Structures are given as C-alpha cells and as structure tokens.
Image (cartoon, rainbow over the protein chains, first blue to last red):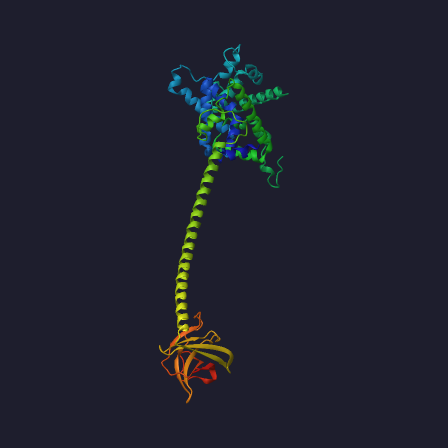
Length: 179
Length: 278
C-alpha cells in the first residue's frame, strides 16, 4: 500500500486507513514514549492518547511539512515530555534523563526489564556512546541541533554530519541483522 | 535517475553531496525549518535517490524505536482507540479478525436508510391513498348524479308513456318529403289539453345554424301556424318535444329553418308532413 495514499485516506477520516497506520507505527510510537517515561502502562496510555490526537488533528498534517512518521514522532515526544514534566510525575522523583539507551545497554541482566536487550545491542553494535546519545537526543528527546551540541559539548556545525555517520552505522547494522 | 533538460544542467544539484550533508537525517528527525522541509520535499519528488535515502533513514529509526522499549502487549489496541475517537461506543475489547468491518456503524446506517425509505414509502402510499379517496369521492358524486338523472329520466319516461297512452291522444305519423324522403316523425296530439308531443327521432341532425320548426296546418286554404322550434335537438336524448297546440290542426309539418325560426315555413325545406286522420 502506497503510504501517501494511505495518509490521504486517513486525513479524509477513513477509519480503515487509520487502523493500518496504527498497525504500522504503534510499536514505534509506544517505544519512543517508553524511552522517555520509562513506565510500560503509562507509555501505552500516552501512546493511545497520541493516536487519538493525530486522528483529531489529521488536518494539520501536510506532506510538505515532513514525513508522516516524523509528524507523529514529534507529537509523541511532546506528549511524553509533557507527562514527565507534569507535577504528578515529579512526585515520583524521576528526572527527564536522556541517557536511556546508554543505561539500558549497560544493564547486564534482563531481569528488571522485558526489553529485547540483545536485539537492541545488535542494532547499536559498533555505535559509540556519543553516537547513541546523539541519535537519542535528536530523535527520541526532541533536542534541536543547538541543544544537542551543548549537551554533547560538540561544535554546532558537526551535529549534522556526526548524526549522519551514526545513522549510517545503524543502517549497516540493520542490513547485517537481516542478512 | 533524473535526466536534465537542456539549459537546466547548470542548476542540477549535486545529489550525492546533498545526501552526504546529513540534512535528510535532520529532516526525518523533524529538526528542519518549514522552508527546509519544503525544499527536501520537492527534492525528494524530483530525485528518487533522495526519496530512497529518506525512507532508509526513517526505516532505521523505526527499527530502533521499535526495539527500544519493552514489549507492550498492545492489548488496548485499535478498539480502545476507536472508543477514544468516538467511533465505538462500548469499552469491551473484542478481538476481531483483521480487515474487520464496523458492523455497528453499517447496521446503524442500514437501519437509518431503511427507516428513511420506509417513511418515504409510507408518505407516498398515504399520498396515493389520499388521491384514490378523492377519485372515489368524485366517482360517487358522478354516480349519485347519474342515479338522480336516471330517476328523473324514468319519471319523465313514465310521464311520457302516460301521455302517449292517454285515450284522448291522436297519433299523427309524418312521412318524409322530397328534400329528405327517409325522414319521419310522429305527433301525439292531446286535443283536450291543447298539447302535442313531437317524436323527432326519425329526423337527421340539423346543420349548424339551422333548427327544425313544427307547423300546424289548415288545409283549405293552406294556413300554417308555427307551434314552435325543436330547440337543442342534438342535446335532447329521446328527441321528444312537448309543444302547445291550441289550433284546429288538419295536418302537421316540420321544416328546416334558420336559427330562431321563420314567420312562414320554407316549403323547399319541408322534411316531414302528415295529415290528421279523422
């Protein structure tokens, strides 16, 4: 199915098209949200909220503004960050940390989580911590280039190319995984 | 691949350099300005290689985001979402096969359509019945009128019959004359009452603007006296006309005259003539 056509049908409030898009992206969106809120049931709840939001605001998407996934990714990030910054969440004394991937990869056992650590390790194989961090910040935490350069203490001009190199390695790992 | 049009070559972008710049990665991350997004959008349309690159970058982020979190059961699923967006009323999660049909909505619509069709049918039916009732009412009126007329006609027929049977009646047959040999008529003359009934069934229909005129005749000398006109000849069903006749008639004649009748009979237009036998 052509993604553009599917998105167009979704924008015309075609519930079948919406279900297909949901099936395509819900695990990704829930995954992104989880890396921020670090709570399974909360992540799932926000995830459903995000899809509700994109259905209700389907008009505001335009392909000229970017990829459909990018659009929902942005909505998901914002929803998750809002939740973490909300009062109720602060009471749980958790901070908005950006080192999810680094932390989870350092975890030796899989007792405390049902994340597919092995799969994640394969994907991030040969990626330096800095690479994992920059991908995490730009894609999962919604950092701007400037914010990322400050966070990682690297020149602003190198964020773009550094990120490209890191994504290239990720793509190599994906190819290897599927071979 | 992109094939440059003559004169456009100089403006062709360096696709490889564009891809290598890392702008597409930022595009997928959603970190570009609106202007830059639009530029990438157009370039991706123009250069399939750029489009492919964007899709590959997106695929890597999709893979990473999918693997990043713990397996979420997904038991809330799309049905829960349908409830949230108001496409589903109940909150029970029912596992339906893929490509499921929203039967509730379809049934609802079907019911609504049936109801509308039903209402429309009832409306037209009642409209039809209403006009049928009107037709029947009109037919009844016509029937009543006909019955009324038939009663009248019967009464007048009886009256007619009685008049003819009266013992004082003299019957005078009138035979066809030169101008119309096949014509005939009968005059029933009640001398006591001074009335005649003219049975003019044997006369042809008078032409437009003409009328039959009945004459009482004295024979010697020949003296015609007008008894009157057979007005409305066409409309009269039984073609029997009642006229007054106070004369000592010896014969009766019927002529065709201009509308309104004549002072004296036009003998060339004498249709029938008959003498009173005594």
